[in-house]
Length: 264
Image 1 (tube, rainbow, N blue to C red):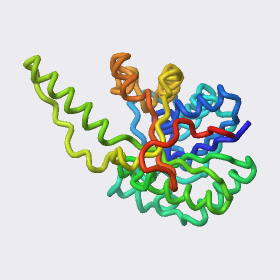
Image 2: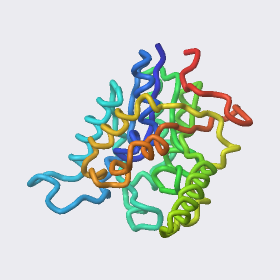
Image 3: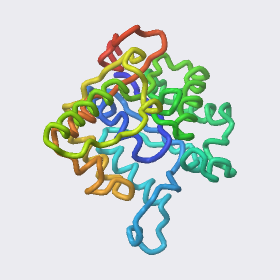
Image 4: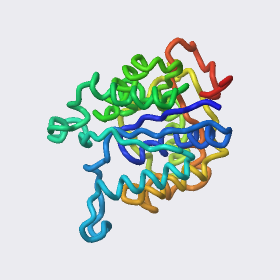
């Protein structure tokens, strides 16, 4: 049995980015630990969603524990930093925000957990945090340093396959044009994920899609039933979330791994 520690910026990031890998590890008999840097205090929530006197922080902590149970995490820890908001927002520079935290200090907190768990594998994000969110970028910096401090042997950077996204968009646009519909504009993809050539691990998690979907539902304050995540048809959900992509330093070029815990 090995131990997988998955480090994230906010509640709900875990199910969207690596929920399949977490559940796969659990079902294969490994220990799974979830660590979240912030409580997602600056997430958006509809009026009347929270109960009287309840804070969004409290709700998101509860949602994280519920989702963790679905994904098979046996331990959940929060590092205690404050959500920094989107890049360029005033919350970035607020006292206590994760974006302003000392990398060395935060890495020390995470490294202590890695040592306690004798972690074999750590998942973080790529150096742009997947899409440029300040807290996600900080997860990369803090996670990489924590692994150095704790001597964690395998570190995987969760990311997205930018080229696959582009192919899907081109296919969708061609289909829309053929059917006489409006061609959607998905904007600039340069800040999303990484080029296919930089990816080193591709994990098929299609067997755990229902767990990912249920974990997303557990984060009801942020992922509504009619949201893009949950409202799309089954085949589109499978296409979007059935594969999880990673980069591991020293691997490649190309995809060399299909299981983060292989051989452990």
